[in-house]
Length: 271
Image (cartoon, rainbow, N blue to C red):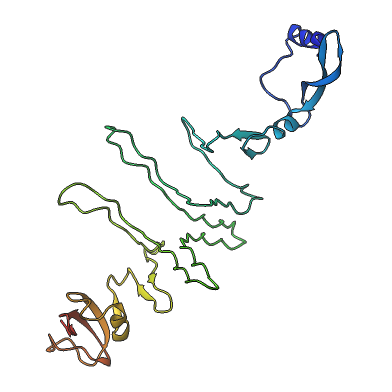
């Protein structure tokens, strides 16, 4: 290689630690050549910084003109600060995270004897666009959690659809309940909460503003037979009689009265 060029760069203090423009800045490399001159078997040539990094055999995440290199296990570790992975706010579209096996999103575990709460994991829908008074404001984005569909077999048994589990955390403290599960409808400026729907074709709707579930007798039976639901209580609409003077009577549908009911393990009774 032309050692005189390197000596010149060193002498004139032209060796830098940052790049001005990766698409035009050149790196000087040496290519092995069959003809040697002055005992040097390499020929100097130039390559842009961008082309050089694109030729590296590394896994990397590219953002603009900078590259973030992962280690051999694909682990990305930040000692301090946050990590944001996003598409362009104006021009970007979807962001997909897929794996051949499991995708896991979890908050951080705390160290021994730190007495710190574990990190939270949150799935947030995006806010809708605000309006300048001319255009309509945008709706907020949905958050949807779907289990996988079952596979189809042309000869063997069919698969089962995946389950969706929402579970509170376990505790080893005696006489203390595990973590609770909260399902809340969205609030509004008028302090009216959104309804909560559970089910598909047979949907049970819970309106938090009513603070109680009211079922027709047919839907109440769909929730579970009186035997299965022994001890359960509910509000029923459609009773043929009122609750007054009919405590303990077997409820009969087909009317228009709203009555409280409970199960004795055999029937749904008014009371």
